[in-house]
Figure (cartoon, chains in turn green, red):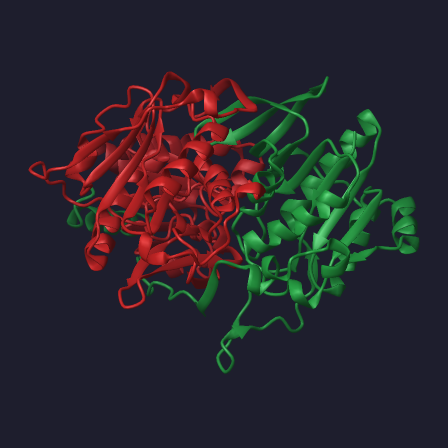
Length: 261
Length: 340
């Protein structure tokens, strides 16, 4: 079973600030990590290979330093990594990102499954998985929390919805996004770390992908970010004083005044 | 799909009107559709265009009722095969309708369904899409939809536009827009669209749905939510939260930590990777107020925080706060409320 895992390198914190001068995010001094939601995708891919054989290919679009994330994926059990990197890819929205991944996947030999994390820590969109599926004309299942069965070109999974879960079946190949409930990612193994150090990560750019420059990066993006800002925190409310009884009485009286009781 | 791409920037003046995808589940239109219609009506008026709802399902209740929420036209596709929201079918049907009728804006709730299939519609058309918006506005001069969405777990807000391609698409988080008053005297039109099943393929199949919310009150729709976090220490202590919730006539919520620990099931989780709620009253017990939780409840009308750490960030968003031991405060609160 050949599995492709799509991952993104993201800042290792959501506590980012805006530079008031340039109105851009201050990225200095922030360590980059594999998007945490993508680590479940890697782990699930590795588990499937352990059960069924085949290989796990990790693929990422990003700047040259995203190679680190792919090497980490190898240390976590992926067999190989491919970096999609080109100055022309910069500024991509989810459509242009999906399109770049789509062009890379066209180049890959047979795969049975593509797994993505449910969303990224930075952009929070969760759109690349479904958009990639659509471009590849493959079925898509979001929020998968368990792969129950894989057999005869079909798979059966559980996916989480607001009020419970659904058992879904799909033909293969298919595209899934996975949630953290699906597994507990392992730590890098010593053998994995050794492999990742010696692994060479091919870099595919516009030329290698034979990409239409109008469909990648900022020029391939339909959306524009016109402004970023920090949300205003609601002002501090009232903290009740006195002993527990006083505090509770005060609360009940306020809730009554406000019409909640 | 890739083959049908027409390229962007084709005659935007041909596109007019705002569409809202009115999601149904088990034949009931979801609240988020009505919330969206309230705001979309204002946006449509700002642009001077029609507002339409699109509803796919089978024997959906009260489709006519959408008109009272501000809708001029309803595109209704009714078929037994659309009842369980097979995403392949929804995607293909919506793409076809959009290509046919060319709305300039298309909105949908950022529900599990909306966030899964709306991106596919945008990819197929193709056009731009922003996810999980918390505000929408109109730049009337440029006829642009201004889409505000949280990034970095809500730490940064970004305003997104889709300057050239049409329609401009956004999924919008439930509960960010309040329901508007309905107007029963409004006139509107229902356009029944034939579902041509033979034209579409569905490659995924729903085998079974298993409900996980045992209680009768759904947290997305509750007026009062009592939520517990790490401070509760163990599953048994959630009984206290349950009791307070039932005394208040509310539902029970939980932080990610509480769910990860197995104290409560995932459908109760509130926050970035759980649900966004906007009750009238939110009582946070033993919750420190990590941003990932706060983004899911900060728009509640009144927030009460009970926590023993006076520096806990939950107090920054609280309307009322009690700094104290929840194991003393909550039982006393329950006792006094029961006596009332």
